[in-house]
Image 1 (cartoon, rainbow, N blue to C red):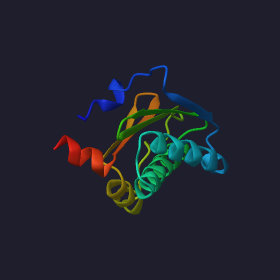
Image 2: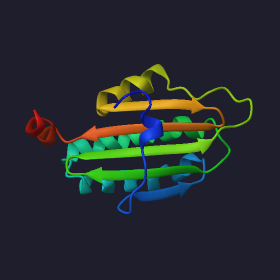
Image 3: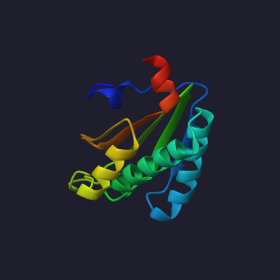
Image 4: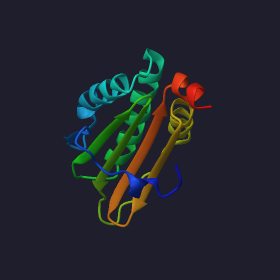
Length: 138
């Protein structure tokens, strides 16, 4: 995916949408939905956990920069799962960032991610592919 991927994720009828308050007490529900989406994509247990961790870290980063609900969309395809999260940013707030530790974690557990502050909206996209799907495509 290129750097404009946050604009390219469109929804389909099979997508799962989740709307949660920007509070860490709702991350448990988010992790359950992320794990389910990864399982439906055919990822193995370790890959499911990796995706869940990446979505958790990115969602928390967005939550720290907004007072608005976080909207998430999960899309699955055979061997691939994509999550897109967004929320309106706080007026005049510091743009969201990942700590060095969080960036290292997310980079290590997903295939690609982006966290962007776009005018009045904070957006992330994260992609995880099954190892077997990557081998089959090679």
